[in-house]
Every structure is written in structure tokens, then in C-alpha cells.
Image (cartoon, rainbow, N blue to C red; front, top):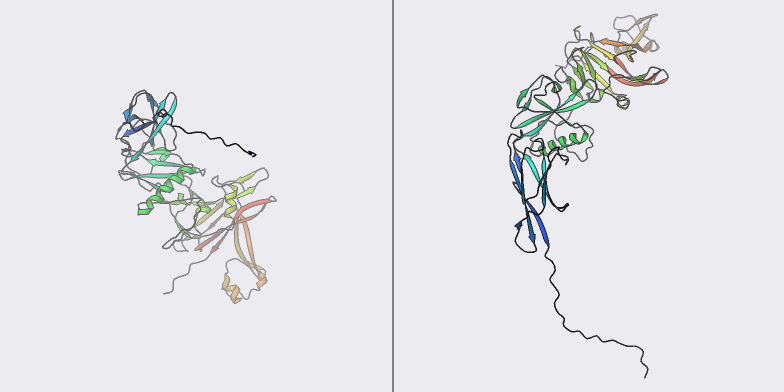
Length: 422
């Protein structure tokens, strides 16, 4: 008989039990209170106590004092506020809510053992009773409040086109004095895009229950938006009270620097200041951007825009003139569009389309051949239109100057207004 394999048989016998494993050790931190709730003015000071505990396995929790407790005050971005760090080798640590320049939005307590972090606890700060109200650009005729219910925030637009945000402080109401000149009632705040997003997001969240008062958003993309009601941003009424919403109003020298990117196409102009239109051209040495509030790319966005300035009173009142300037210094790229009518070798500038349609001018001089009607553009450094014109049309155009691209404005007046049929 041949054996082709061998099978080993190993007997199994009972052995002794092994040793029990080491119980798991868990460290815990507990805060009292677990949320710091104070008034928006931070006059209330709350004492916070954080205690450390140790638990082994399923045993009872006991106070633990074998490590170091480190407390820190954090700002809204999670950064440690200067002078807010402290530590203690004990089973608990206590601190007041006004640490960290009394501006913390979160407190952080860390349990460190032999230099290693074992446990971290975050304690949020909640302000009760007050909401931020974003009020857009600061206006000298608007009253701003710091009350138990609201804290008004504004953005200040300066003559060089820069912006700075401010929030009310000190209580009560203020009016008239610019925030940068009134540190007793205004506090400068961050104006980077992150801050703007936080402000807008907070207002949108409040909008769920209709509790917001003012919403302004720039450079936003909206998808799947539903708007109920009527929306019309074509008509704007520019007054001394809101002029800075549509440009910059220099009341010292009586100039209004129009921002075409913020203005509706139909403009009821209610101030007497001269209107400065932004231009760009090459003067042989450099590119000149009149009014620093615009970049060249923004000025290119203006090309093709048409605005109608509307005389709010009787068109025949000589006191209602519009005076337009393109730029503020040097050569000004302003063109006035007129229609020239030639009659018997002479010229006539004030006939209208009725003479073209009827082939007879209103004053009876005889027919005008179509070839004798010529559009005419007059270059000028400023143009004053108003008497006899109810509308003044201005259009931003792209052309050539010194053999390079230039952005300029063309102006044309339109006569008396239509009357509503009775």
C-alpha cells in the first residue's frame, strides 16, 4: 500500500484565561454657562467656569486636575484676540466675558496633558435684543440709530471712489456729520467682500420673517429667483438727499459726478450742480481717466448707454439749465448733436421733424430738399442745455482720439413735452 500524504492531528485542550485589558480613559470639559448671552452693547459681564473631568471605562466621572486648562477668546474669523490667552493647572478655570478687548464672538478652552491636546470646548457668544440694519450709502439728511432694537450700518463713498463701512455706537440718533468725522457715534468696520457677504447673508436670513429694512447687493449671481410685484429701476429721481447713490455730489464746488453704472436711463434731476461725465482718452503721454471712481474697464461698460435727463418743471423756465462737462480738466470729449437745415444758401438750426415730413418749414420759407438736411456734431468742452428743452439725451460713445480708443459723450436736446390728452 502506497501513502501519498500525511495528516497531522493536533489535540485541543482548555487553557487558562488571559489578563483583562486596560480600561479606556476619556476626558471631558463642561462649561457653565454653555452659551454666553449678553447685551449688544456688552455692558453685561458674565462669568464662565469650565471644569475638567476624567472617566475610566464604565466607572464614575471624577474631577481631573492633572493637566493644564488654556482659555482663549476668538474673533468672528476664529483668530485669537490679542491678550486673551491664559492657562491654569487645576480642575477648573474661570474667566469673565469681557476678556479679549470685550469683543469675542467665541471662547475656546483646551485641556492639555503633558503638552498634548486631549480635549477642546467652544463656547459661543450670543447678543440678544438687537439686529444690524444695513442702510446703504451714508446720506447727510438721513437719521441713523443705535437702540435696543437696531444698530445701523452704512457705507461711506468718498470723492476718489473708495468706500469704507461704519456701524453706529454710543446709542441714540445722529444726523448730518460724516462717520469719519464723528468717532463718538461711529465705529469703522471691515469692508472686504467677506464682510459684505456676511451682511447680505444675515439680511437674507432675516427676510424669512420680513424683519429686514434695507437690502443692497452688488456683483451677485442669482439663480432660480422669484420676484413678486412690480420692479422698475429705469427711472431715478436724483435729489440732494440721494445724489451720492448715483455718483458723487461735491457740494463745495457744486459738481455732480455721474456714475453711469448706477443710474437709470430716465433721470429726474433735482439739483442745480453741474454734471460731470466720466471719460477716457490718450493725451500723447498716458491714459487719462477723468474721475478716479472708474476703471477703464468700467468706462467701456458705459459705451452705448443712453440717458434722458428730464426737466421737472416748465421747459420754458430759463432757470432750469443742465450744464454738462466731460471730465474735469484739459480737453473734454463732449459732442453736441444738432440738425442743420439749409435754405437758399442760409442755415436754420431750430426746425424740427415737422418740416421734414411736410417739406415746408413751420415759418413758411418753402420746401426743404432732403439733401439739405444734415446732422451736425459740434465738439465742445461743456454744453448748457435747458431753455426750450424738456428732455436732454446723453449717450456714451466709443471713438478715436490721437489715433487711439477714446470714450466720450454726445448730447442732444429735445423740445417741449407732450401733454396728457384730456
